[in-house]
Image 1 (tube, rainbow, N blue to C red):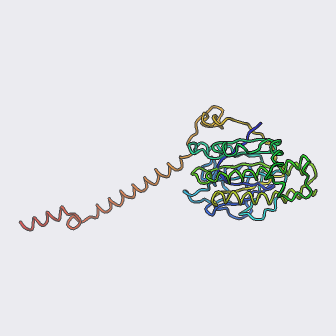
Image 2 (tube, rainbow, N blue to C red):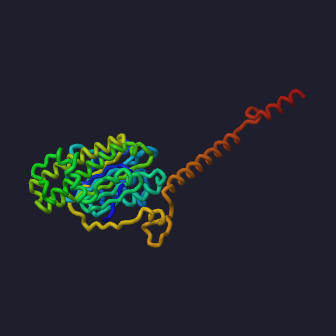
Image 3 (tube, rainbow, N blue to C red):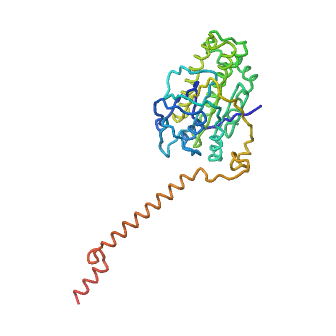
Length: 350
């Protein structure tokens, strides 16, 4: 079974067919409303910047403004919905057009979280139920060990107590059709993730950020099976919009209003998405996973911090030298120096 990353860093991201929608975001993560398009390949950089991490190249996108240096969200959640142009989400912070919808992953962000917060064991989760892809890192292994992963496990979960089938208005959806069960299975996974996090609320209070990356393709299968004008597809679209809205609100509340939730909706990716599984231990052995020669990075993630410390310290010292030199140059020895003052009084007495 191929694997997908589950990361304890909660920023929720949802992609809506050729669009990026910010469902939830704290006040100190400033998203500007506008029609500024963002490329699909830049979404991982956008997620990294919202979490306060450095990126290889500057993101020249006006939708995200720089925030406080010492105040960052505790989690980022990104949900990718395939097979739909848009979702009628009741509430959102901002929405942007998505251009060049190429497949992307948050592997680079997960690698950064694992590197910077290895001792704190953050939660990292990357999950695609339809493809049975799951990758968990850090505390996620203990928290989500009971999370159903394979389609067989999820379908068995639908028949158990607490299933979403008891609360969802299925309307035209069937409990027996394969395409319908795939969509309902993905809804069940969202429900179970929220339930597990509510049981482990302490994860939202630690100092390490959590990362969640989910990919849903149930709507894509429904559209292929029944057509996008069918009642099954329309009912499923309405259900998913409400489920995602509640999912974002629940995660946002669990992290104390300190999480970013994004939804990306893409009808069709331009190229097929391929993922290469890797071991968690491999990230510690390879200093630069992007280089086939195992070369070290030209600089690490603390470069910008160290540079600013050295730069401003030099500026402060230079200003101090200038001020001291100016005062010494304009000093009156008879009034400003106690040594000359005592000498002057002694001469007068003599």
